[in-house]
Image: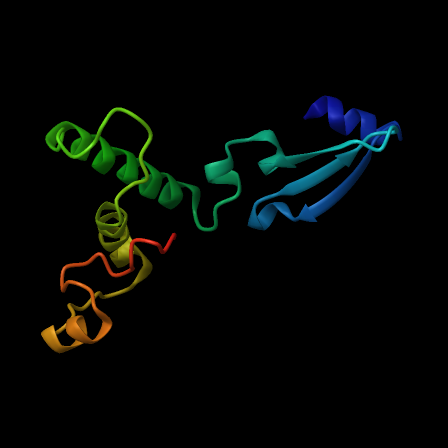
Length: 133
């Protein structure tokens, strides 16, 4: 990153700020031959630099996702074949539920009538399988 900034200062590369660093820096660096690169989070950890919220809160969410995924892989070996998997919605929603209190949010439970109306189980997950967070 320091090399890119030095080249910008020398006028050999043009820098265009696409998003300011307060919301997750995104910068485009264009070279003299017109090719360009996009740098996220000023070259730092993207999950911290481009996430919204306090870094420790973001890390807590990330680490909680990782731990619940590891527990599921360890305890539900028949469910997961070797490979890359998307975190099951039930686990992702559990991480969200565990963190809601820190945001001042109180989660209520669905009634049976609400559950039937929107077509999801009372305990979740609350979005259909095709939905991506």
